[in-house]
Image 1 (tube, rainbow, N blue to C red):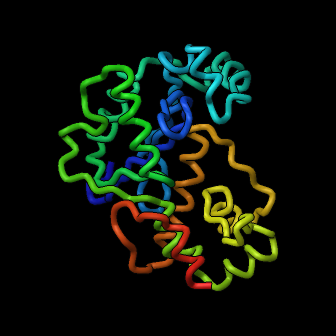
Image 2 (cartoon, rainbow, N blue to C red):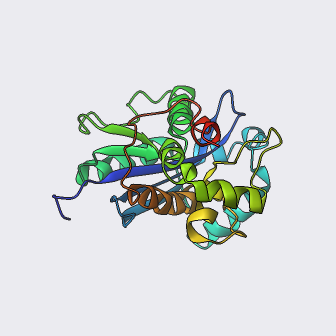
Image 3 (spheres, rainbow, N blue to C red):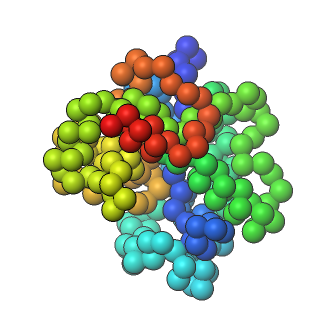
Length: 229
């Protein structure tokens, strides 16, 4: 471990319970650096949510349940309690003295994790008190301030029809990864750790732009590149 490096705790969650009351059933996280290198990574299925058939019927990607079960049998997902998953996440983040917690839509991920804490009656904080002064970074906002604001992106978005019904250029992680890799057929897996891996690459590409960026969470970041068209 190189203590001179700045380490990021990058997270992604998949949820049940609807968007108003999201509950985490899939937690993926990794320790990464500014260049997108992954040092530690974990993938947890949360037993209290995943094993609740009624709750999982409300999952946005409930059609993936058979996939999860198959992958669990192969040892690619670990079924564990929320308490154990959060404890391990914090232990690893503290080990690396993570300075930033990041996610593609950090506001949603943190809200879902906080809501899961309350729902399950877990009294510990999502982020350990040992992670003193940890900063927040929304990769969605970062991407909107950098790669999505490029004139080239506007042309590519139109050419590939990455345009919403309202006429706005799309700015989700799937499109970001397509743009930086040139792979227009890429489809996001929408499982925690797999999404963390592509988000690490998106974040690294954004930092390579050497643009001035905003810290924390930007409200409605998709407006930034669309207002510049």
